[in-house]
Image (cartoon, rainbow, N blue to C red; front, side):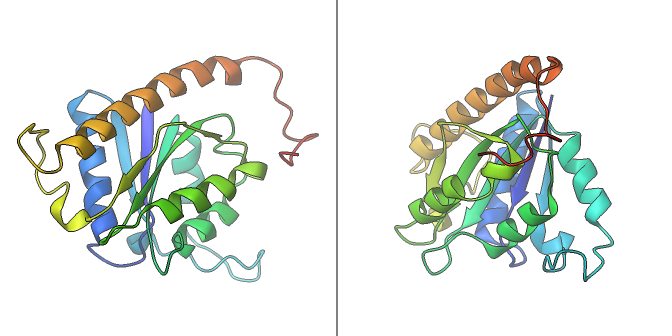
Length: 195
């Protein structure tokens, strides 16, 4: 089992990266293999359908392909999801097909819901990934995910408890969808669009 956590902030040392790091460490503490992809450091060029060569496109596709599940962690900027995540999804083809994705929206204020809503609408049609019904909205991120433990006396207890629950569901979905992928029924050459 391998979960790839994607921090979609395009800023270095962002609050989204802090949340992604916590999720990554938490999965590892539960003996679930996970990796972290920080889109700020990964530096994919803007997708232009082949006019610009992305030297790390093969590396991206390999990371996506070897993973069984994904967590998309997007900041809310101006009421929108990260353009870096949209850009990354343009590079992906069918590496994410029939694998679950957990969505996480991050906001310094009272937001966080808008990027989750946008992520629900965008990307999955031709990528064929399956959205987990469990997601996470992290409002007031400055006061959350600053320590590794889940402490019932801490102000972020409910968020961390929800994160743990959502990750447990994601891992169970990943196990279940391995069965679907093992059957000889998926034909992404003939049915490459999700509709």
